Image (spheres, rainbow, N blue to C red):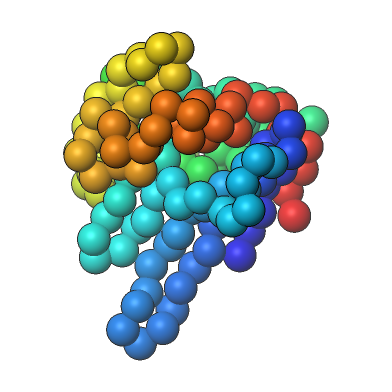
Length: 167
C-alpha cells in the first residue's frame, strides 16, 4: 500500500490486491468526515473509475513540497485518471515526472503509453460540473451521479488540497 497526504486531513491510498481469485489495484481516499475510506477507482477485471480528472491530478501533484515528490504523486495517481480533454502538454508533463525520478530514455514514449492505459480502462471520460462539484459522466465511475452531492463534494475537496507527503 502507498498512501499520499492530500491536505485538509485527506489521504489517498493505492492498495494492491494479489489474491488467487481477487487481484487488482484499489484507489481509496480517507475523508476527515467519514468513518471508512471511500473507493474512487478499481483497476481489475471490472474496472471502476476514473477517480480524478487531469486538472485534479496536476493540482495534487503541484502542491508537493519538492519536484521528486510532485513526480511521485503524479505517477502514483496517473493510472486513476480519466479525461477526454487532456491538454496538449500532458505527454511532456508525464515525461518530465519520469525523468525527475530517473527515467533516462524514451520518456515521451513511456508517458504516451501511461496516458493511453487509463483510457483503455474506462475510455475517454467526460467530466461535468454539478453545483460547483466535478462529476464524471462515465457510468462506471465512483464519482458519478450515483453518489450524493455531499459525498461528491467531499471527494472533490480531497483532490483540491495541498499534499503534505508520501508515506
